[in-house]
Length: 124
Image (tube, rainbow, N blue to C red; front, top):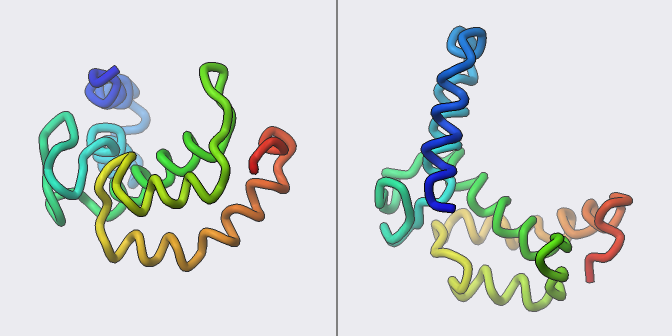
């Protein structure tokens, strides 16, 4: 599981047309660092704090929220209140406090968007 970050970068690097795109650097950074943690206990590089790019931090939090709030083939969705508690208390990774503040300020809107999608009708 922990190798998917490096393998993602390898895949992106294998697409010659992407290298000339303005998003290439960002895409590679996100692929590699979206499992880094604010406290430095993430992977693959053990980056800490602001050494993690803002875009990788945002994707990391979005990835955790999506994984918790939605059903997966291997698990049911968690109730919204539990998701927010898990994210807020660091049970699913440690996030930038400023990013968490921003996230919680718009989470209600995110939740309503999720409830409006056909594939996420089971969010609680």
